[in-house]
Length: 244
Length: 291
Image 1: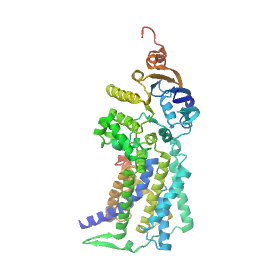
Image 2: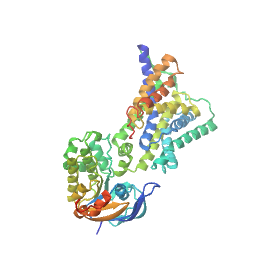
Image 3: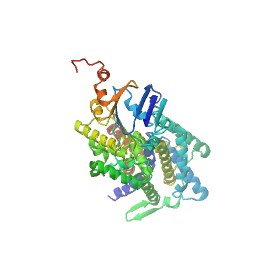
Image 4: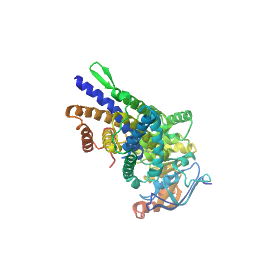
């Protein structure tokens, strides 16, 4: 039984047009999902709609049998769904440790937060080395690790990442995706939006292809990657036999 | 040389009070992105509270912060809920909120003028006319006590921002509003508290100016121009920047006052505002706007 169910969701920003135009998606516990699609397909908006950052105009989103509609971002977070935005949304003038503390902001027990930060340090030793350094002084890859670490302080059930490889060197992107797989092995459900479809689908169990605010097709990552409809969506044409 | 040191003492002691005045304005801008043009009008309103508490109850104007700070804090919460809460998250509406603060300043000025008339007032505690003498130098007691109290309040504000849960939330919202939401900060509630704290700081500033300067309802236009120059120089939203801006401009203004007379002293602030906007619009410690 899926533990996150998105059904016929219509959503957009402010009084602007609909970005999601009736999107449905079932997410099963402990699996990793890669959301791909051309620019403007609604990939990032889907993640924002799930975590309460975009107003939903129609449809439903249920998590573990309870609706997420009408909840603020902090209330969605309390249910165990963490969002890592696209724009390296760290707090630049805070230290690495302070950024991690912000990850545990909704927890009341400060000692527990510090214990969980130590766990994050075990997973990402570089963060421990840089604990008292300002986040803005770190490299892109280290900042991405810090974002992942910040999300992990809450021990979430679902982690949603929006283009984690954006602007990173291929080697660093690979490290980020390896870390993501570690989270999946620990039982955390992963939903990742990725422009680099080959890399994203290469790491995830399941691929979901979006276009014009709807789920166009989905399937096991390998089959999605080889599906001719992918080339049509990304290049605007079907691949021919010789092009293959 | 003696005269230069004396001017420096006067400038620095006034600068401490200016820093307190500017802190609320810059804190509100940092979190909400709104230039509160009514900040100085609220300061003048608080000065009236201190004035009447002194005349009616004999309450010392510095001690009257126990009255002005909580009253203005509550006023801030109410004002936020009534005028800002529904518009703050919409960038289109947020850009016109500065006009709401302008209208608010006019309403406060008009209301104070209607009830208390536009005559100059000032509380006159004994220390306002006394000074500490140290060899060839003198230190006006009023300025010294006001700066000491300002330093205490700013120190408490710094500790709150640095060590408390609310402080972390305020700093996070100042850095990146969306990221703060993502980690679970209720940014609407944080904005409301910040507006309240900003107003409480305006309240404390009002208590100080009630005996340092004479005031009347329309005086806030002069003050808000000075405060804007301080926070623009330091960098909008930067508390440390506001402190640096306040101390440096206050000292420069004291020197101008000594050399060319009091008429030219306020010009220092306006020229600084003009120059900083031309040379470094983001101020000394502010973030460069993203293109």
